[in-house]
Structures are given as C-alpha cells and as structure tokens.
Image (tube, rainbow, N blue to C red):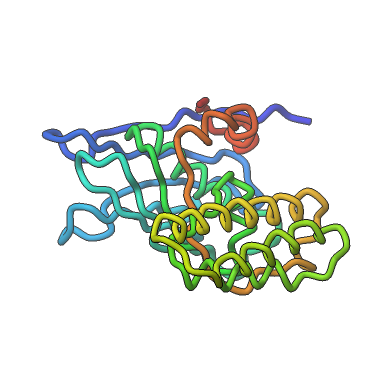
Length: 241
C-alpha cells in the first residue's frame, strides 16, 4: 500500500488586529479525488459566522459546516453541517473531514466547548467524533429518557431500567437544582446508550427519535488524542493534537 503523503494545514489570522484563526488544508487522497478545505466568513455582513467548505479540485462544493465564534470567546456553536446526498454513507468520509477541520479550529482558537444541536439522524455520527449529550431542556430530557426506557433489547435492559427510574424520579416534586441534576443524569444514561449501540454496531436497531444538545470539550479532545490523530493521518492531514 502506498504511503499517504501528509499536508500541513495553513493557519492564518481572520483579521490582522484580532486573535481568531482560520485554517485551510488539502486532502491528497480520497475516493472523490483530491479535496480542499477552506474556512472563511459565511458572509461579509457579519463578524461571527464562519463556513468550513470542502471542495474537489474543480471547485465543486461537496460539503460544508457553518458555525459561530465570537472574538475573545472560548466557545463555538455548530449551526449546520451538510454533505451532498450523492456522497453520503458511501465511504467518502466527507463528514469526517469536516469534523476534523472543526477540531483544528477548536484547538487553534483555544476553544473550551464546541456545542451543537444534533438532529436525531446524526447523533451517532457526532458521537463517533466524541461529542457527548449535554441535555439542558427538560422536555428534551423527558423525551429522550422515554426513548431509552422503551428499548426492549435485553442487552440494553439495565439502561432502560435506569431511564425508567429517572422518569419516576422526575414525576416527584423537585427543587430547581435537582431538576438540572436530572438533565445531567439523563445525559449520562444517553451517553452510555449511544456508546453501547456504536460498540456492537447496532445503531439501526437503537434509533433515537429526538434531537439532542451535544458538546465536545477540549478535555475530551485531548483524552482521545490517539484516536483523532489517527484520523488526521488517515486523510493525509499533517496535524497532531
């Protein structure tokens, strides 16, 4: 097998008089051919929304992610990620490349937390890149707990029971801090549910029916350094965490 040539990302300041940085890089070998990633402002009319563009050598846009990042902030918010239908689930890994670009943005801009609202159909995708549930809405908490509680798979029985116990606990009078703690507990149950489905390749049998708030922190990124570095190398990106 030929060794993949590595290309180092180019990191530049968004503007000369501020600290935010943007990156660009080439993906030398892909099923879709040579690819190029570039990050720039989504529009000249705002100063906080950026777009990660993934194009082929002919300049065709294959996928993109839009996120917000304010100057001086250690937080990013993912707003929308999309890959053209013809390239989805066909081992082009375009979503993965976009996700790696956003992780570079996190690290280069010293971001502590990257938050997203994941569609139900994308929760497992984001989880592969170490995003974790971060439920804050009580309605979202209750719907997702019921989703897990209704799972009849014997291998998930313990998680279904935990979800049912939390549902019963939530029905009792709770102080505000206890209500928030139930969101943390629900996030932990959902995290384990997702991890187990990914581990035994049973995500299709354990569908999640509701969107969920998720987050990726710099701590989680560094804890998964070896895994993420292997993905950079896989795509010929000369970058290490």
